[in-house]
Length: 392
Ligand SMILES: Cc1ncc(COP(=O)(O)O)c(C=O)c1O
Image 1 (cartoon, rainbow, N blue to C red):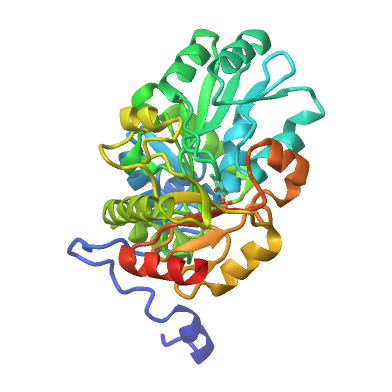
Image 2: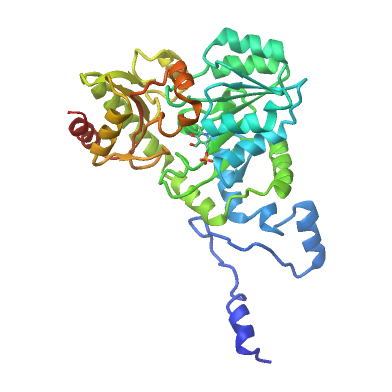
């Protein structure tokens, strides 16, 4: 029996069998729902996680990305989210914090993370911020507050401070707390928090993992048990990553090592050049010997790699001078975000740290003339030439 045109239009081609050979690159599976010849198999997929049933419960392209991130981070499993903030929300919500067992978090975490923690926990009194670079303060906060979770970032933004993750993890574990590390700035190419006992690693995949500025995503990498709980949580939270975004992220990750190598080398070259420029009052880069955490970076990170971000302060500059400088750049693009193949420059007072207000921003050491460069993979000479023409 031949179906009518409209029926054919809906179903034609669906019976082409899956490929016999093994596809050499990841495939995109946009299907939202799956059928089975045997309804017992559909029940198993729905209720026992044997096979796929509905995309919010799991999907093949997303599973490939999750496995890839878990492999690079050295964790048992990983769970992908629609954004880095979605991933952080999932990780925080799972922690089940109470005033008796609160979170102790680095005060200088990414602005939206700071806001999220406040939204989720400030009212219940289950939130305490600490100056994460101050070892005594961190130790005291853990002892005093008896947290269930300690939250920090591998490299802070924009002053690129590096906390002593091995020591903090040890103190946290001694007091029965788990540690969540946002490893977005370092990536597993530079540093794998899991190697120092960290329990949960979070990424904004929007940044270095994706690497091309064309995908918003996030990932939580952790134990199989926690990942299982996160997936159950995700069934009701949603915030799932889409298959096209998972594919783009996977594609980006194939060159993570190459990009990070170039970006770290470019950042170091630019930082060294900036140091010798009279219009520059200060250069902040963990690869420079004068950075307060240079030795720790050498100890923790892959040899001779210090990240792709450089912050620097224009001498005697405030917003008008910084804006003129940003407008004068021709190759480096003045835009928020980081970790892309192309270089980006951001003014914290205008974007990432705007919400802090001037007084608090200055208190944190983020001056009116401070800008943050995310080095791309262009030739270092071209980046330097662009900075030179914009500065002089
Ligand atoms: C360190 C860090 N964590 C998390 C996020 C949030 O990620 P997303 O923008 O993918 O939600 C960002 C974004 O800039 C970030 O820099």
